[in-house]
Length: 125
Image 1 (cartoon, rainbow, N blue to C red):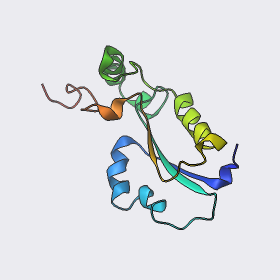
Image 2 (image 1 turned 135 degrees about the vertical axis):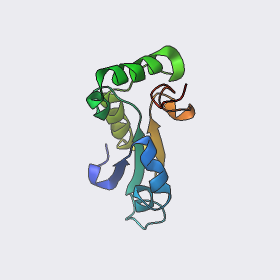
Image 3 (image 1 turned 30 degrees about the vertical axis):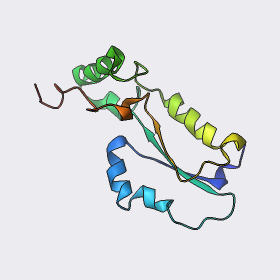
Image 4 (image 1 turned 90 degrees about the horizontal axis):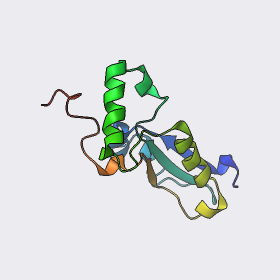
């Protein structure tokens, strides 16, 4: 594995990405000169069990979980912290040596779907 010092990663929630496109974390990596062999990527984790979502009211968290498990998210489950960690490990391997400046969604396919959360949570009937 490459030393972690050679890989710059930013983790952003899905809604933080629009800010990064306009100059936030994404601009830390795009167009910047980095020493040879240094890479910069962004990981966008989806809804995960044991995350900030766990702090939501139980009924709201359960709606989100049910929504993902119902098939709306292609993987039919919420992510786990290990899923995001595995993406970080992947990007630090020699097999990822030609990957740089990329945004990697680690969300079980949720980024390909809309809306992010059930319409009932958004107050839409």
